[in-house]
Image (spheres, rainbow, N blue to C red):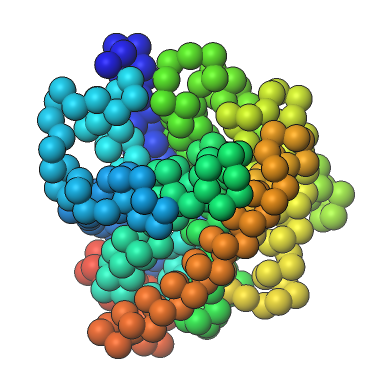
Length: 392
């Protein structure tokens, strides 16, 4: 057990939780209409709580309990056999559990943005619970837990390179978001702009800071690799923010606040899989391309395909994560076969499993709220509260 490594991952764990609470909650909350902001907060908080419990019950064991090719088994349910002295690498295993738990929290929280303003609270909780256990945890095992996509697996000695979650987090959440948006259908009114761009910017800033723990912590050590990952993360975010704003200016004659901070998130998602394998110059390149690529993906999905992915989850997180994963091979830091093969395998599995889980859950609780609830807003209808007192 190494004291410096332990101290850094304690900090990184807190930073990654900060990404969901309050980072993602504020980012998503500002993007929706005022009548739905509390529902976004409620969904983020409830998912953080539920995923934490389920990660202890079985999620951690499925992902990291053993080195089987498909799943980790059930030897670590309820952290069986783990106490304060149990070591994993140079860390207390309970800290490794907690760090990975924050990833299990934010991944299902990401796809909340795809169906915001029209999905019932019961569906959100039940679907997210099953999805984390049946999709996220197995995929995490395949790549990070010694499964068949990791080193020595189906792609040979050099397996899939995914430093902090381009496939495990962003591809899975992005594809689930796209499919759910298609299954649930569009909102009745898709034209209302974000109700609070300032809240969006604050949330994006918290996500940016938290991402240092997300990527830097994935080194699982306090060393130069962690420092390089943090530096690459920051530079990619900065580069993507600038190119997104520039591309907006070229296309529309102005750069928006919501646009530049969305570019920040695109740059962060895109560097996530590569942050431990590339240097500062490559990070600038990845972010610079991502700022334009993800903006065009937004236009394609929203305007041409007419899919109501409410908060552009797939275009930003899905496309960004997939792009960054491919760039690992482009830059010579990973094998083409392993990178593309893993993207394909995980993509097909995620889409199939998401569809099945959504259909099964819809037999228990409806996917979508009724038209009256959607019109009046989820805050007052589902939770009996309003974000703003419009009479004062």
